[in-house]
Length: 104
Image (tube, rainbow, N blue to C red; front, side):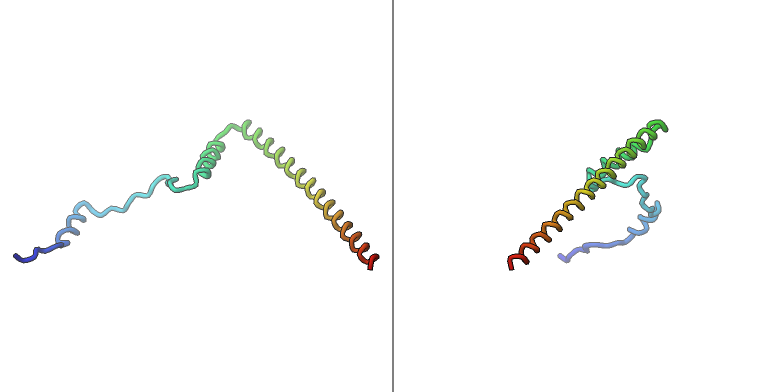
């Protein structure tokens, strides 16, 4: 017995074009699948926060400005502290150098 034919593409393109080959539709909303879950949650809360009353917006802005002011003060304090530490370290190094010169 002879081997039978394994494959043919006869008539397939005709059948495909009978109803037309359509482009796939673009999704209205981007899929969140595979995204960082923490980011997705935060994004949802951020979007929800955009829809608020003017009074609520003013209150939030005031809180934000207050927090910013607090951070600026903290930064300034840390900078002063760091400069003080550097100055003390310089003085200690100078004293150590002077002592070592004295001994020699």
